[in-house]
Length: 428
Image 1: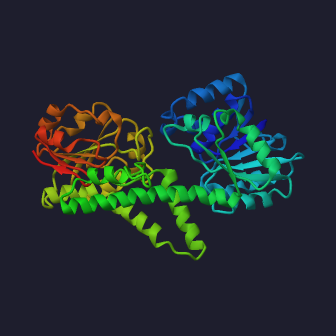
Image 2: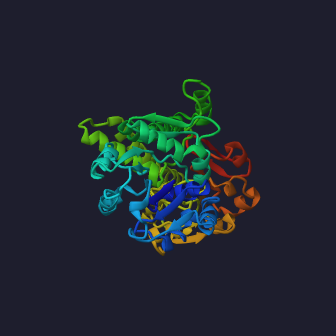
Image 3: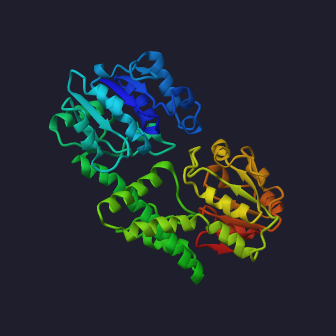
């Protein structure tokens, strides 16, 4: 099929690489806010396994063509148009949709963007009867975009037309061979389902964080509580790990979108508001533990922080807990020595050259030199098994604050360190 992909989101890059790899003739028009010359150097894209190499291979073979303006994209010669733009770029689609309305054939427009519920139907109305639209919510996992596109666990397909469904199945046939992964439903249902999924996941995380706070107050190790809850078949273990807050461009954006949908419908969601409030509160939990340990005497201290990215495997820091943590530490005059294997450029773009910030991307232990305490914020694998003897010698006050509960409290205590996790603690 002749496919035009528009957008500079991760979903656009993954679709361009994957669809061109299975024989489709793909034209990719990145959004003007982030043209290809800028996009190809983005750290978050370069960190995605296989994606850039697949894009280069597709361009070399001729199955993928990259263009930088609408005329070069030949919108009148396409069978499928795949939209993967950010919510803020929704208003920029007018020119493209106008060009598509002149297409002589029957177009299929795939909405792979997170837009308001009902937007896929509105896009079809703007085509003036020249095509059909379907919703295909973005379910990609950052850090695994190629794998989650080419070997999907499921596709949510919002489709109200039998012919459009048939074309979508043909478009994605190469990725639907092992088992049936396409779940069809009405367009509005698919749009709301995507938001509802992330709302439920966020609720589980926030509930577990609330239990961790209660466990702390009662002197209970929350790990026993987590394992007991997870063993119940009605609950399971997924997304039951307490931590210092979640972030990310899509997860956070979807939650805000769901809140907007609730508000626009006149149905205020006290539950969702609480979930969002709990998460923002949790982003400062490591700071509060540091404050408590030193009885509020923080000015002039130096603290090491491991991890800035909102999750392992990505270079992005969108809504990451580290941003709120840094502001709290700097407000108290704390110098931060921060290590991250991938997200340092993104962090510096966001906070600049702050006088109370030193950054490292090599040996994580170097960030601990001269520090009184270590805060673990992102659970990169490089942090899971440090040199404990060296770490204990470097941390002058012997305090380890584990924001992801990746360490064994008893083991850390045996190394002569004070351990403070999320609902867990141990002393030498």
